[in-house]
Image (cartoon, rainbow, N blue to C red; front, side, top):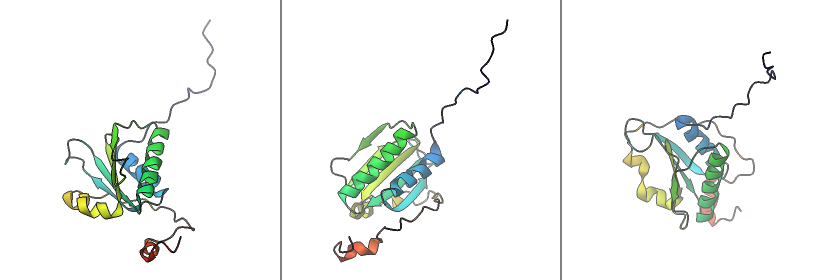
Length: 150
């Protein structure tokens, strides 16, 4: 007698995002903590160690840490293996390496010092998704007046 099947399809585990999809998800996870000036640099065929750099900034070391935490938690939730990370203690430039994608989170003044965008100026940039604006968010110009807008 043949064994009867339950009729339910085997539950497939969702596949972790890779490459371009992961880079764009990282932008979303960073945006959840109000990351500034996101850029995704497409390094496919240009770099032997990764396919995409995601570069974002934070206004303070605390915000940098919050952005990194959001990205790391997003990766873990999506079952993306994290190869390593560097720079969390000082939070001036934190790097999260997920293989195909390396996320760079800078304290805003440090970003211009290292200027990864110019270093990879010949590499194309990905078009970023439209991200929802937080109705309670404060624009970056508000911080030029001594954080009075907070």
